[in-house]
Structures are given as C-alpha cells and as structure tokens.
Image (cartoon, rainbow, N blue to C red; front, side, top):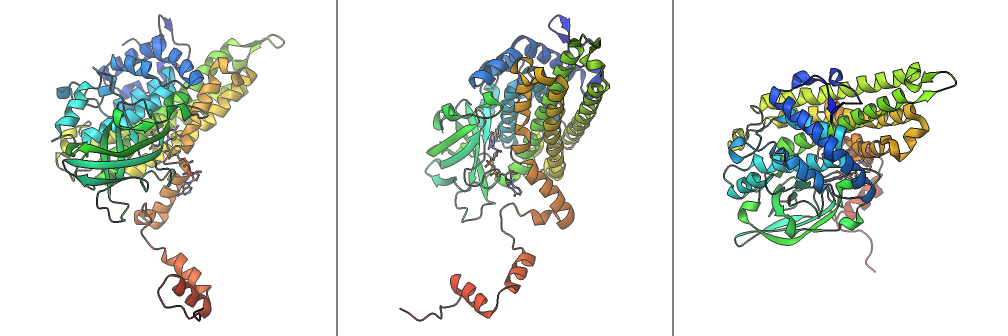
Length: 467
Ligand SMILES: Cc1cc2nc3c(=O)[nH]c(=O)nc-3n(C[C@H](O)[C@H](O)[C@H](O)COP(=O)(O)OP(=O)(O)OC[C@H]3O[C@@H](n4cnc5c(N)ncnc54)[C@H](O)[C@@H]3O)c2cc1C
C-alpha cells in the first residue's frame, strides 16, 4: 500500500495518512481500506449528494460495496465471506462515512448489526447459513427493526409487538417507529416479546423476516439528515414464519441485545460519527487552504483562530477514534477475532462484559460530531452554510448521532447511575421498586390519603356509602 492517500489519480485533498491510525490495520485490512477509498471516490460520494437531495435509498452504493465483498465482511470464509473482525468493521464504516456517504454508512451499520445477530445463532440453522452465503452475490441488504412507537428510544421494550407459536412455526407481529432501510432491505431482524411472555417484557425473542413480508411506507420518510437512510415506519402484520426464522432459542433476545446487537451498533455507529467528523475536517482543510482574502494577503487557513479550530477538532476526533478502535480490539481479543464458533456454547457471551464501555464510546463520538460540525461550519464561514461545499450536509447527517437510541441522555444516565448505584439500578424493564421514592411519597400522605390510595388500588373495600 502506498503511503500517499490517493483520490483517483491525484493526492487526497483532505488529511493524509499521517493523521490516521494505520498501525491498527493488518496489511489485508489496509488493502481493503484503500480499495474502499477508491470506490468512494468513483461512486459512493457522488451518489451521496443524490441520496440526500432526493431522499433516495443508496442501493447503488450497496451494489458497489458488494463488489468488494463487504456485505459479508463478518461472514466466515467457509461461507464465502471475508471473515473479518471488529477492527475491520469499524474501519469500513468510518471510511464509508468519511469519504463516501454517511447515509450508506448508517444503512451499512444496521446491516452489520443484522448479520451479527444472525451469525450469533447460525450454528444449527441452515436458512441463516444459506442467506449469509448469498449476501454479496445477490446484494441482500439486512437491517434491524427494534424501536417501538410506544416506547420511543427505549428500543429494548417492544410493547406493540409479539409472537405466538403456531403449527410449524411462529406468528409474528411488529410495529416499528423507525427502521433504517425500511421498505428497501431484503431481510430484517426484528425483536418482539417471546411467545408466552406473560407480561415480562424482559422476555424477548427475535426473528428473521424477509422483505416481502413487511409493510413499510418509505414515501413518508423525512429527516434533517441521513436522508438516504429511509428510516421510516415498519409493520409485520401477523406473518407466519417457519420455525427456524426465530434466531436462537425462545427468550434469547436480551442476551442477543447485549452480546451482538448493541455492541455492533454502538461500535459501528460511533465509527460513522467519527467518519463524519473527519469528513468535515477534510472539507474545512480544502476550503480554508484555498480561500484568499486579497486585502490582507492571507488565506483563511493562515488565521490562528482557524488553525485552532482544526487542531482542536482533530485532537477530539482522534480521541474518539482511539476509543472506538481500543474497544474494537478488546472485542477482537474477547472473541478470537470475531470467531462465531465460540457461540456454539449458548452461554458464552464475552462482548456483554464490556457493554458499558460501548455506551461510553457512542456517547463520546456522537457528542463530538455535533461540536466538530458546528466548528467546521464556523471555520468555513458563509460558504460553509451553502450546500455546495458539503459541510452543510455532513452537519445535518452528524446531528443524528446524539438522538439515535440509545440517546446520549440515556447513555450518560446509564453510566452515572451504574457508577453511583450499581448496574442493577438500571432496571431496563421497569421491574424494580424504588423504595426510597415510594417511602418518601407515602410519608406525605395522612391516614385518609393512605386509605384513599389503598381503595383506589383495590386493596381494601371502599368505606364510601353506596349510592
Ligand atoms: C436517523 C435515524 C435512524 C434510526 N434507525 C433505526 C433503526 O434502524 N432501527 C431502530 O430500531 N430504530 C432506529 N432509530 C430510532 C432510534 O433508535 C430511537 O428509537 C428514536 O430516535 C427515538 O425517537 P423518539 O422521538 O421516540 O425519542 P424519545 O424516546 O421520545 O426521546 C425524547 C427525549 O427524551 C429523552 N429520554 C428518553 N428516555 C430517557 C430516559 N430514560 N432518561 C432520560 N432521558 C430520556 C431522549 O434522550 C430525548 O432527549 C433511528 C433514529 C434515527 C434518528
């Protein structure tokens, strides 16, 4: 691999390899990255503008990614995939977002999450293994549909969804408020409560649903940024699927969330936010080194204020990148470089042990991209405010980071609460009683108030005379 970063036949106009942590990549991963940068230059970046303007799903970009085998990035070589690891997945998403198309990077993030959920429980499932073999050949795009209209960003709590056991399989229903690639993906991994969940919302299962079984309304999708990602509503309306379309055993959903869906989403989406931050810095470098002020004979980049903006943005972004790649390496170490065979033992869940680190990774990257986007806009002045420069589109795309579930409000609370009160205090499924709050509120009631409360809860018979 050449040390000079190329953009087609020219030297890349943004930051060179001296500012990239190339030492983290194997020679094979370095080769893949340079081919991917070429693909971004020839295809993905131009399509990004069209996707944004027309709210067009970036299928053309997925077709291009499939030529490099990237849909099967995590699929083992014996199934025809690239057999790559977490570090490589983070590099690929960052590269697509930075040089190519952030909408494609987010759709690809969801595809990677869906592949991970499928591979996690693929061992005795020939349907999954056959699907994994065809990902690149037939450009089969996957996605995750978890969020529920009734519970917002608490995507682990699907109250509008469920499943029943029926002869030969499962009848599945799902309502999702947001699904990246909704209506355009070829296959979906969806989460519902388990059959016979008996009101226990921590009892979750997840299913493979093929694209022809879902109802989506892509024409209704609209958003500030990531406009190509088509994150619209989705419905699976009591669809019957064969037995092996449930991934893993009944009730495996929470384990799958902690072991694969969350770690991969948090890692890859963070890589996407970092890629957008770097894309913004690249654009700001190109613009500020070219624009001159004739009166003072200076370029914009000659002002120390602008140098400070770029310096701080890059230092903060490389801190976030270092965090993503540190955790990607940790995941590689824990899983023998993403060897799916370790999960033949169903209770082997090594990624789950560092999930709280992945929360921190996402918080940092999503917080940083919003700040970098503002500062790079400031550095480019009014020209940055106009769509032609590209800063404006990256800024809108980056704003999705903070609000995508788990949102940054939720994540910082998870971390702070877990530190102060212990992990058990997080109570994802609203099952633990907060004795302190309860006792404090009860303390405020007099005897009559307590009696009224007990009556209202049906615990004692009403003392009111019957009418
Ligand atoms: C571009 C994009 C793509 C997406 N793609 C997908 C996808 O592919 N699949 C999928 O399943 N979902 C997807 N989502 C959905 C996403 O994960 C969230 O579910 C969604 O953004 C929640 O929106 P909401 O309006 O319901 O927010 P709300 O949950 O109503 O949040 C509103 C505010 O309340 C805060 N808040 C919520 N809960 C708490 C709490 N416990 N403590 C403190 N503050 C809290 C939030 O942080 C936020 O500030 C996507 C979202 C976006 C923006």
